[in-house]
Length: 633
Image 1 (cartoon, rainbow, N blue to C red):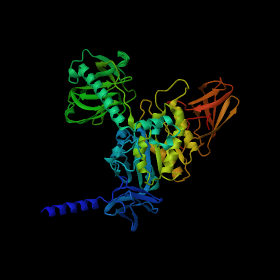
Image 2 (tube, rainbow, N blue to C red):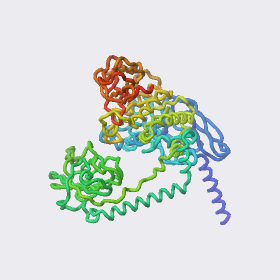
Image 3 (spheres, helix red, strand yellow):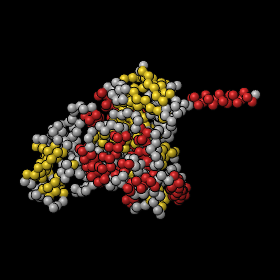
Image 4 (cartoon, helix red, strand yellow):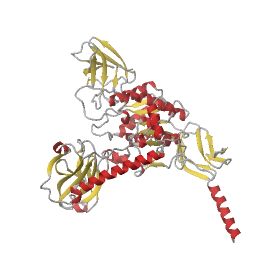
């Protein structure tokens, strides 16, 4: 009996080791899209010396795993097509397409999923059904110690009304446009993380000129430091919120169910209670009464509370209907049957504000919708302070944003996978030190191309959109300077393109919803740079200036200079030894003439040089000019 047991154990061990001989990286899996017209790499892991046989489209390729168990085979160029099956020893991969594959990376505006864009693209989401547009979403991880060779999960997903909700909006519309134009499958490998600066996406070698960033990356190689920092900050945060909850009269007295608000004050929504109460961090409760018709109790509803700074918990008739824990996401709450009722209904919102000015953000929608009928919730609300804290909420060390970490964990595992190019929407987190951005981005582009061993990979940049309140005077701006850095990179780094978004922003939201136009403009750049098509992909591109008397005449790159005629705004002009002042401007053929009657000796011009400019310079293709300054070519 003992020998029989040993034999079974031995057999199971041999069987398990056989089953585990070949392992594939996460990217090489069912449903993947392979890059057309390039020699392809298929790689993985096995026992040292294991023979690997790859079969695809009636051809067989073999190799042997090296002493470390790594193996790779090279497949010849393939035309667009599929679906195909691939076998790798005992593994069979199904539903493989060949087309164009793009890496989409950056921070939150690239990450922003279609579910957050639903008000603009509800029909797009509902009708999404395209097997030829597929996404692989890279898990959001960091590693400061060493570049990783594989991903911690992820899978290829084709487009349908469920999967599209999690796809990057900008990348989806980019892929959709290319799929429609080229009639080939498009795959997106999406590797983004909200709030991340460019240096987080760079490796140690490419940051050699930036010792402060290398030093920071070195610091966070210490696992104990990461654990202690996170533990301490979690404890401080937990203590702050526990103190707030304990101090909040509204929680203790259940104001979400309280019917008597006779002692509450009145404020206008959107707006801020701090305009009346003065600045404070803590909690405030707000109440709105609405009257609804008969039959309401049998209907579902949708509550849109725009955006709130910072966190909220929202109740209807004392029942919790939703909450958001930080300031950026919209407050969209689905209301099930039975929550609303005929007659008087109360909407109660508890807002927690940990720093800055707590408020209901202006110029956002606030309504309750039932059967397509909207009840406007703007106007007078009752409010009462729940608790005032003596200190602001504890800050957080965003370790995941530190230099090198995202490159190691989210980019390096991709470098064997052949691609068509990159799309990049990032920069908001670098506006505090904008002048270094061009060098950082140029270095990163060069490094990524070298990692993929292809120096002409297209790199397509989304320029930062307009954002924040307009200024009365032409002033320096970190956002304007960073846009200029992006423009310079697109002009001087080969095979780069710039998708201008200066007309797509929202002054009160760092995450503008119009991602379709962003994706469409990126797709124009892809067709021009990636495919060599003779199309107009740019708005007017500044080329040179010439001084004539008290005017400066601006010329634009041929092919982009079919200007929409008329008067213009957004221009500022600089007197010699003076400062910039607003200027008059008009088109004259394919030129723009700029002047200020009070300036007799102008030396330079700026266009749309502001956080949130409003210039309208376009060409007849409908594409806007990038902001620019004549101080730089």
